[in-house]
Length: 148
Image (cartoon, rainbow, N blue to C red; front, side, top):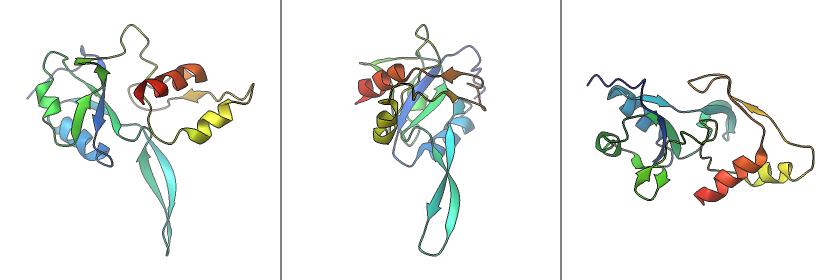
């Protein structure tokens, strides 16, 4: 397909639950640049404990794409929609590429941030967003509230 992605902005894609890796692989095979941040998690079964990788933002992945040619991305199995305002995709350009929609288990994280002076700093160490830091919990919570 030969899609040149370097000039296109990053978009967040809402994907089917537990299908983030599949959707990412399908989009990469179609020529798109995708980013699926993951974290390692210790999963306990009745007979063993295993370390698995789970998406950092369940239900979301990030993709560089032409906003005027959305149909191939939307037709990819597992992709539900492009995150945006109404029918217009939102690349977060102009508002800072550091903020991305977060979804998932946030209850305990929000409680930890309620303590004054207890604001963790998040730094991305790998991938296309490498080196970015986010220490403002208010921005993270505002983003999470906007998605609910």
